[in-house]
Length: 432
Image (tube, rainbow, N blue to C red; front, side):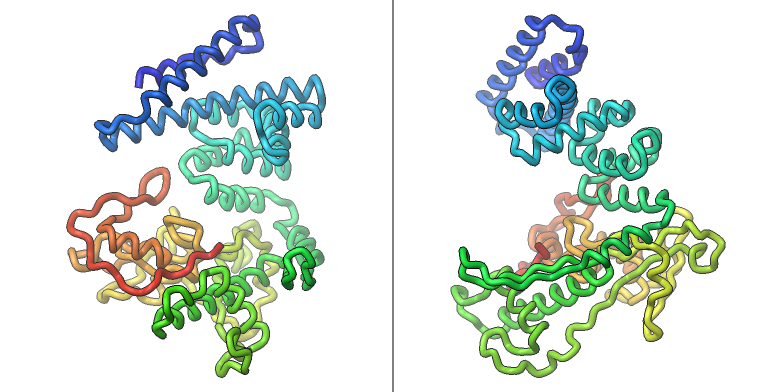
């Protein structure tokens, strides 16, 4: 712990521009020596979980200080040698990939116009991944607007980077003058698909790029049929060495959906026409529906924000459901009195959780888990239910873990009792 504190002291002295080069070299040398000492000592076996978590926080602060210094170094190199020259130094001297070097040059330029964001990075509140999202948002909406929005920066500090990217996208769309119409129009105009034979691999390759609405439906259909194939594999006594892996199963699912034929025998597969059924969940604020708030948010769950014109394109047979929420977005009056969640609760959880709360699995591959176990008095109320994918659900049950919602997001903790009996069968497939 003393070594980490020592590194933090060095990294917090960030007035490098005015420091003599000798002092700077000495500070770097001492930091390297401290890190080497840490690696030699290793992590003690006698440390408690709380002490290990404290170490993790300290390491994050060290990495934050280094990230700020890297951005300052990159900015100076960019001013002296241009972006390409700076990227070359980062590749040759810091061992970065071309992509990483290019990203660092862009981030260093963004930080020059975003002092509040720079301060958040320096104190470890946000990471380089958060900064990348904020910089991308700044290119769309302006660096000043992003940097002065304290609520956006606070959300970055308490949200994992992958989930914050979606929140930043929504924040940017709400400020776009055209409400995302031009973006959706561009996405649709750029739709394309390829089918070609790879001479190098000696295999056929399919590639498609679609707008969020059509992609959402195709992904659902592919994931659902893939899951049906997984259940079929696990239920027919196939020898372990013959069971398809997830990549093979997804390829077979795509073939069967496109041709209606069994991927193994190649004969027509009964019941394939029009299967499986997909259901997109589109959320829209009431003000957008009744016209009182034209700037209200509109989003496809698991895909992202879309312009309000999507609502006008719904087919006549579209099923429309409503759910009531309070001002903080908490669902109200959705009932209980049974172990399995009602359809209204599933809808509310889908809108609230936006997929598995522990990973990036989409909503259609999740099930509702009792936060406080049903067998230990847990209620089937919306505030006691959370969306988890099949593998995470099995992990919670098999290892006796419980879900905990912390300021930094959902995580797991040891349960209050013994683990439930291990589930049999193969785990559900995760999306790629």
